[in-house]
Length: 188
Image 1: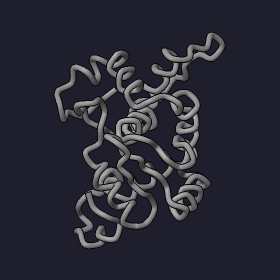
Image 2: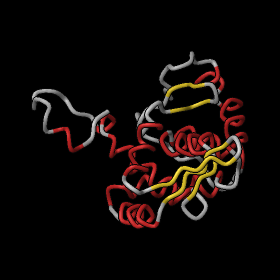
Image 3: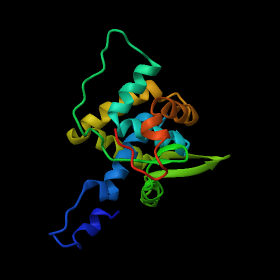
Image 4: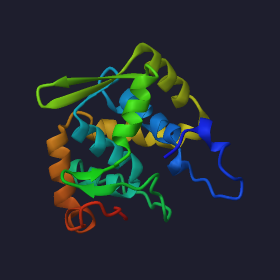
C-alpha cells in the first residue's frame, strides 16, 4: 500500500487501484468513526472491523439487516453485481483487513485519531481535527453512497457489540466467511 504522495514515483505504465492507496482506506475509516461511532469513537477493533465489513459489503449487510430487524413492508433492494467497496479477508474473528494497523497508524500520525487501550480492547476515536475532516468528506458527493450505507449500518448495528456482530456474521455467512480458509479473500 502506498500514499498518494508516493504515487508519482511509479512508472505511468503500471496500473493503479484505489485499493492500493492508504488515503482511500483512511477516508473510509474516518467516515466510519464519525458516522457509525458514538461521538466519533468506536470501542474495539472487532466492532470497527465488523461495521466496516457491513459498510464495504452491502449485499451481506442487507441479509444481516433482514435477519436482525425484518421489515415486512421493505423488500430487500436488488444490488448490482460487484458492489464490494474493497475486499476483506477471513481472520480469526471474522472479516478483517490486514491494512488496518497501517491505516490506523497513518491516521494517528496525522493527528486525526487517537487509539487508547482500555482493558483488553482498543478505543479508536476521532480528534477534533479528525472530526472536522470526516465532516468535510461526508459532504463530498463522491462519498454520498458510502455515507448513506454507513448511516443504515449505524441504525441497525451501531448499538451492538463487536462480539455480537462477529457471531452474527459467522451464523449468517458460514459458507462465505466461517468456512473460508484464514487469510482468503471474502467474496459475495
